[in-house]
Length: 422
Figure 1 (cartoon, one colour):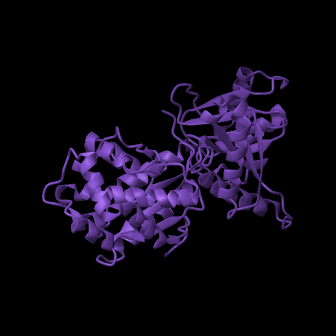
Figure 2 (tube, rainbow, N blue to C red):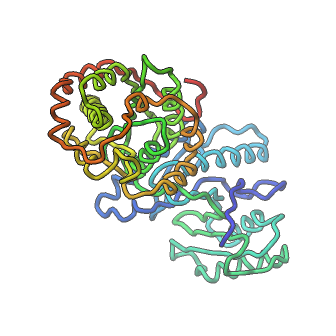
Figure 3 (tube, rainbow, N blue to C red):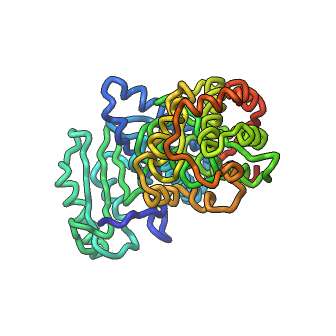
């Protein structure tokens, strides 16, 4: 397996490569969209520009299934090498930030050089300076007018590297892969890259509302649906005034971490403790947890309608807990008209935790807090709730009116990725 070069695209300790540092973005599923591909690529381009606006002003263009991001030219300081190093550091920051943007499969910190073999060789030698171990050259000629074929370019560049540094060539599982991509007006040279998130650009599939607890599952559900192109808002139910604000702090921290995948995230918090008291006094008994979740979904639907959301998202996984049986999920669906998306329904806890660890939400979710759900947990929960029994409880609660009042009590927060505090 090729080792990824995740360092800045320049030789360690040496001068910058002769050329312009830029970011080369490889698209995945987007390229299969046929006539709608232009819409998807334009949305992705806007999402990338929005994601990096705090790092540097950039120019972006699209070509043949790739996008190129370059720093918008500004007045230089007169110190060419210093300016070049500053650009390399900025491009490194851009690449890392772009790797979180949905719809991208690979991000490469590349050097943009003149479209001639000598320029390619110079950039390749600069990039391979100071390295040890076996290498391979992989060339791709998108512009067939280039005088050398991909194989001829591989051989030319590889021979020059061997001559200069005496490195061994190994075509299978090399320690370093030098990539050369010949485009319409220039050539891109790079080593390694950063894996992207894949999926579709956020916003292409509409908007939905995530029921965000402080647990492990709902942040992963949100991530998976953003990856399918949904822009999501978040709704958290706090046990206040009968619990402290700890669960709100956790929800805020989780949304702030997830914000890097879409930007502009909104967290809505509703004090739910008094409504839980009403459920407890309604005679719900073993149905209390399901009745509570139905009220949560009704409240979420009310808010989603106000926000223009077309679906609700939960972290339900079939059979994971007693409230997540097939019968109980069917009873929950009955409470609302909006579709309930359950992207984790077929995943087990290990798979969910692996994803949470990868997206950096697991450690936050494992922090202690007083979850509002613990306030209402019966000794034994119903696993086969009957819809008619739950509808009777809804009537006693006047659930639709209660959901409206709860939605009116919501407070809004704007957790932004990279910010500290709340």
